[in-house]
Image (cartoon, rainbow, N blue to C red; front, top):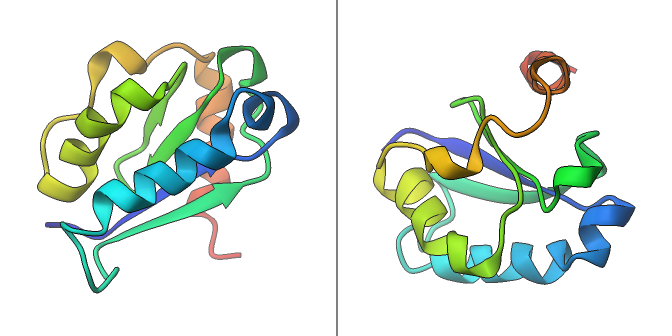
Length: 111
């Protein structure tokens, strides 16, 4: 399994939709598959800029941008990030490509 950083948007719109709770549930579902927490790290992120499409989650270095994520989507996302399954296509391609591009530039930056 390749190492991944999973960022859950913690901005106003996403947090109002339940992103804080969703982030905790995602961590709970990943924990049994990565008990040491060395392969998948789940973190909150201030805002991705795709507010109207939240809850948004990104997976780096895969460069997968998930939108409109609900709790029922978490098992499929866990399969992707913890078991190397393909990305969940039905949750991708929602935000504008330039928004995604900006996020990847930020995450690729050494800063």
